[in-house]
Each structure stands twice: as C-alpha cells, then as structure tokens.
Image 1 (cartoon, protein in one colour):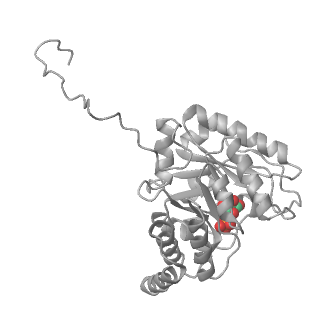
Image 2: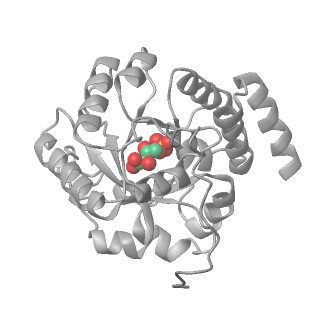
Length: 294
Ligand code: R5P
C-alpha cells in the first residue's frame, strides 16, 4: 500500500480536457454538498430530473383519513411504484417495512389538527437525531404564510433547514392552505418564493393559474400536491399541466390512495411525470392497468 518505489508512473492527467463541471439535474442545487445532492438524487430521478412522491402523512392532522385506515394494507403495496414517500415517523415505523429502499420525506412539523379552526400554530415535531435514525432523505415543514402562525412556522422552517444542513439533509417547505386561507396564484407566488429564499431545497404547493410564472420565480424545484379526490382523468390533467408549466413532480396522496385503482393511478402519474404522456394517453394507460390488475 505505502510503496514508494516500483509503482506505475501516473500519466493520464487529461490536460486537454477541462475538469468536469456538469450542471446538476436538480434546479438550484448546483452548490450544495455531495451528501445533500446524493439525497436529492434519490428523490428526483437523474434521468428525468423529476419525482413522483406518494404522500400519506394526512393522519398527522386528519386522523384515519379515507384510504389510510390501514396503512399496512393500502399503502405498503403502492410503495414500489413511487419514487419517494412522504410520511410521518409513526406511520413508517408501524406500518411500512424497511425493505423498499425508497427515500423518505419525513413530516417534521406537528402541533395542530383539523379540529382547530386555526391550524397555523405548529412546532418542529421531530428531533434531528431521530430523522437520521429513520434514514430520512428530506424533512418536511408546513409553513402558514399570512396566517396567525406565520412567524412561528417560518421559524420552524429555518430551524429545520439549519439542523438538516449540518447533516446534509434537505428540507421541503410546504405552503399550507388552512381552512380560511387564501388560495390564489398571487398567494402561492409569494409563499413559494419566501420558502425558497429562506433556504428550503424543495417547495410543495398547489397547481393554480399562472403556474409557469410561479415555477419560474421559484429558484428550487416545486412539487405539486393533488388536493381532494377528483376524477382520475382530471388528476392526470392537473399533473400534466403542472409538469408542462415547470413543476419538478408531484407529491400526491388522496388522488392515488382514494382512486379505484391506486397502482394503476400511480403508473399513469409516473408516465406523465417521467415520460411526458398526455392526459388522454395516461388515462388510457390507467384504464388498461386497472383492468389488468383486477
Ligand atoms: C397533508 O396533510 C399533506 O401535506 C399531504 O401530503 C398533501 O396535502 C398532499 O396530499 P394530497 O395530494 O392528498 O393533497
């Protein structure tokens, strides 16, 4: 190992080639550390730069949501078809086997439920040590821009970004829409940019008019939530429009696990996100898969 003499002489310095400086496949992440890039690359596929996150963290505010009554029965079979999972540590540890090797976006804010009219008062609900223990690839914090809890939720976000940055774990900022909160494009334009400026590595928001301007003005990847269950064709259209307008993927829950055929739906969403299928093509795929899987 430590030989001084008798080694081959080094000669391939590639003097005619500049050092590799490839731009990274994830928006705004060229200058983060290697470990953080590695975690982000587990979430956003290098070949497409996009992701299909399966969100099933709803129970942390809504209790046993329709489709999530038995996570072991309804969610575990879907895991292989998603790029990443967004969930609470309680759900993961109790109901999802640690065998899938899927990146976890760990729900790390807590402190309110749908029983409260003002849901904007949250705290950081996970210790960074436990996030490492559960092997989180990202931490998710809900932010209530414009609500009573605006300041404290922004504080939760920056504290988490700092804690994650020490260990190379990125943070996803969720633009929350409380019961009475504004849901306009003007609101989402402001909220997404605020979260990115404060250091969020990924921003989750809702699709709306002028989405291409929101995506353009947000210097980090945006993933789009699905919202309440709508017909499958409409959810695929929402996905298509979001991707065409600059979203880097979806973080979708109810429109997957409340679908008549969740696996077929995940496959169809995947095809829109990663292969650019149109809503009609994706809906055909959904129908075919639905009948194949029955
Ligand atoms: C809600 O509590 C979570 O933030 C969900 O992860 C998010 O709303 C995405 O789920 P859905 O597509 O059902 O809106």
